[in-house]
Image (cartoon, rainbow, N blue to C red; front, side, top):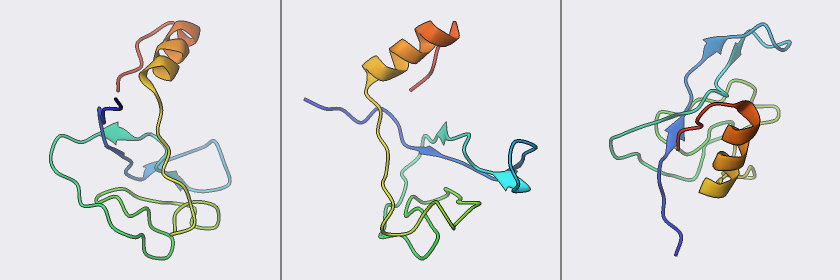
Length: 85
């Protein structure tokens, strides 16, 4: 049976990795209830989460991604450090 281990949100942070000034890709777990809704134009529908580049992220036609614990364990092995869920 599947189990939801965390809901993660991102807040805008400066980036030098793209043409955009900010990114919210660094999603972190939240420990309080989160309201989930149909996203507004350019939003995620996850309370407190941010989309910085609405051209390609957010909105009702974009996916919510989920990772299996096994995927995180494989990434941790490749990266050489724990990947929290």
